[in-house]
Image (cartoon, rainbow, N blue to C red; front, side, top):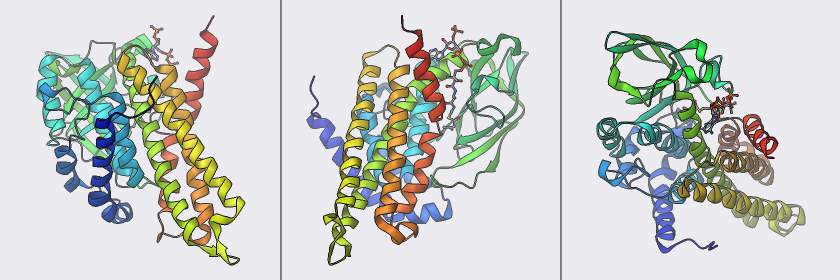
Length: 381
Ligand code: CAA
């Protein structure tokens, strides 16, 4: 067991960190306030390989490993968790679903423009009445002639308004339960596919989150992604990897918050000395550093096992649950250490505090992660 990063991994971290510091940090607050999706950043992310992180080279991707993927997401989240969320949804949900379950023709058609950043990926599962109960969806896809007709609506879709390539889950056989769900690739501009309301969010505001409406949206048969009825199981498999990405996002966010509180504690004086000299503050710093490291290794373990092949449902949920709840505590302490300055927008603490909450909700709430973990524990003989 070797816990040291390789030279390539250390270089990757430095490269993404420098990029995030120079190309993202100066604009992060502005994007947050305006709830602006930074389309102008996409070509720069693509040039670094960050829009095709794990896409195979033959489709123009960077073909990085699962651990490299975590490093990229971590370093983006350290500076701007909203940008990291967009990159995670584009790579870890949309491109990943096509890469894992698409035909050669689908991969050739969609993965290359996604990896080059010419097209933004979206992945639409959740509906207004089915979030945790993902199989409870109502959107339908009905076979008609040589294609499928989709009707319904999706909610909380990352890139719902700015996406170009949508992977959409729909019921193809209501009576078959989880075996009656299929996935489809739908391109922006397809008649019947329309962006709905853009959500006005608490945090992660640089990442577009919107409704997607489907009204008699006809797609040819070759837009079916995977076999008919396999959409739910494939979705769960995509989420097994996606949740590792959200764990990495939480680790990076917590790292950013920790660095901000450490900096502030060293500068701020009270009672004649810097507040870093008080044990009450030191314990918060020590707890944060310890918990971040623990979450990072749970995340890398899940990523390592994912790269080895085989199922990581348990490890992914453990990493996502621990990392996201850890990050909420770190962001909370970051505000607390900043005192009144933690409550105003001149300092980064309040943004981490708002952004972090999504990590315990998106790609499966903490409650769903506990449910998944408990099911695994109880099924062991
Ligand atoms: N890998 C492979 N197969 C899996 C699997 C996995 N991880 N998880 C479940 N399955 C299989 C099961 O084995 C079962 O197959 P069989 O019937 O052949 O045994 C089938 O899938 C159904 O599984 P369950 O009976 O466990 O299904 P369930 O209805 O009880 O749901 C759940 C399980 C874990 C609660 C699931 O619904 C879930 O993960 N919910 C949360 C969904 C979620 O994370 N949503 C957020 C999406 S992010 C988003 O939409 C916004 C965005 O843009 C980012």
